[in-house]
Length: 412
Ligand code: C2E
Ligand code: CA
Ligand code: CA
Image 1: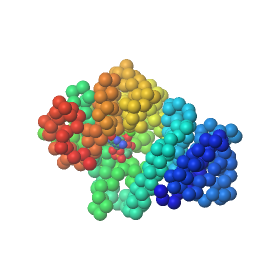
Image 2: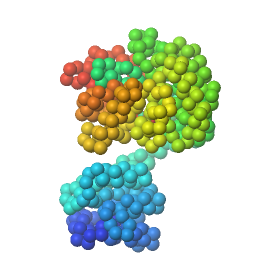
Image 3: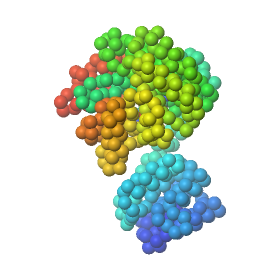
Image 4: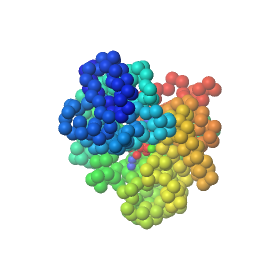
């Protein structure tokens, strides 16, 4: 075991000793101990222990419980690796895990009490893997300035990468979502988190959206010309919806590309930042009238929830990947996914599950009568040329044995 420093927070002295002993027997030389969250914070604040590599934290403790401690910890040391120890039921542990991740902590996992040596060893190994991986990614940081991003926008270097959406019932490709990629002349293909926040903050999303929409509409026409009459989805930033001319501009652009608005779906997420609500609703109503599909993106997360259902004339509900992932094995997630699908059906809109990665999730969604699936199980987002091939080959290469995954298809 690499030289690790670990802090164990547990009020029950016998249980604490057990964990400390296990860690020592696994070769961890420096193990500090605290009997509640308050004491642990004092130790960190007064530097009685140098920054630990991992904190093992009990949830039920007097004075300051584990949840409160994790909140304080995240403000002092964001990104700290944490292991939760608890004798509570799975649903509670899962919700604390989510909380820790939302606070920005690096959660290695949870151990039941009494914990076993194997469990603890597994988590320490996981920590090493995470650390090595992080060291590798830090070695090649690629971050860009606003100036570089704007220049790329000017030179139209952003491209839609298409990720297929497949009908769970028929197994056919019914559409694709256009996800922006920066095809950088030197650094290769760059994901949206490296440039979208910069464009949002600097008020340049409109130009970006129109670039992506224009290119996507052109691809849509080409697909139709080849006999693939599917719809393409484009993400719409909320900041664009405040301009009441938006609906006209979008309609114009799509029609100019020779595409009927019925073949374009606009994905929208509601957020706290949504200030011009009236203007946004005016735009969305007009877009719907012109025939565009409207999708509620990231359904179930934060602000994209019930309230939106009653306000936007949407046609599709997209269940966020954070609910879909692991839903086949997690009862609470399963209930959320199932009731979202149910609600979509009652409201007469299409249900789409994103982030489908496993066959068992596909099977579960099919059983729940979800309409459409999107995710790595089917394919990762790919450039337009690859998507043309995908559409040509998908119906031929699917087999009875592998109804979803195309044999031999490289999705990496
Ligand atoms: P999103 O709209 O929720 O898009 C889904 C994200 O999930 C995409 O990430 C996609 O690559 C990823 N994904 C798809 N299938 C799977 C799966 O099976 N497992 C996992 N773990 N992930 C999966 P991506 O492409 O990095 O995009 C991130 C976000 O950036 C998007 O989230 C969207 O909010 C934003 N974005 C991307 N392109 C555009 C764009 O053209 N305009 C705007 N306004 N936002 C965009
Ligand atoms: Ca989306
Ligand atoms: Ca999402």
